Image (cartoon, rainbow, N blue to C red; front, side, top):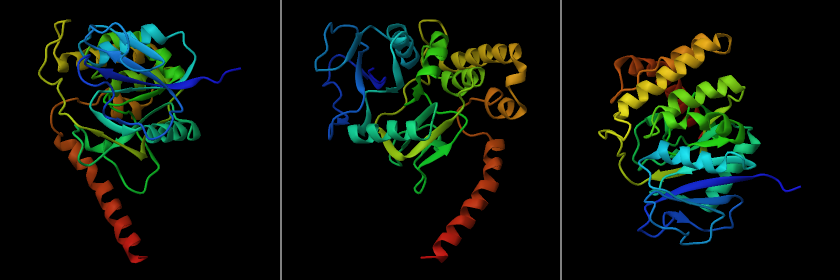
Length: 273
């Protein structure tokens, strides 16, 4: 019996050299899916196991179409990368190895310090293999088969994809009992282009922030229908999280105890050198 393989889905604009941001240093222990979001190139420009060409607006739109194509496929994990994210095949192999070893349901590689990013919590932290987190961002998420299949029908709620990460995926994880989520600091990725979704209005008439609020409302309905599966920590850390530009003062204050603990650890570690 053939073992289910992971899949890495990478977007492509249909014009540039496909996957030129990937360093092909070893053979992949996974299958490739190349996604032409221009919808203009009928056949793949290189050898890949899966190819989709469809005019698409943004990450959520892409993920919805990939789900529609792959929902019946037997896979172990699937990751979604943009066409400007720099990483090697060996690092992707390592990422899947750690995901399987640590029995992760949702994960992402950490971001290099010179990467474009929105949230500092996903920046690489030396000394960690993985670090548990409530959610991973839409920039480069990796999902287990179970999470992908359960969440897929809801990708349609956000063309941009934002809101799916912080609200939808954690809610689905609680509903299906697949809640092991982490940033994998043993692997780093660089996002080489600024985030471009912030000020757009999509074909559904919603802006980025309006899509986020809509996804949040959908998840609140799911939670209200299954209250026993969601504790107060989930309500505070996920469902009621404010998604705004900048970092609210309340979040900054919450960092102070962690800053003190980190400073203490740094001093203790330095004393052993």
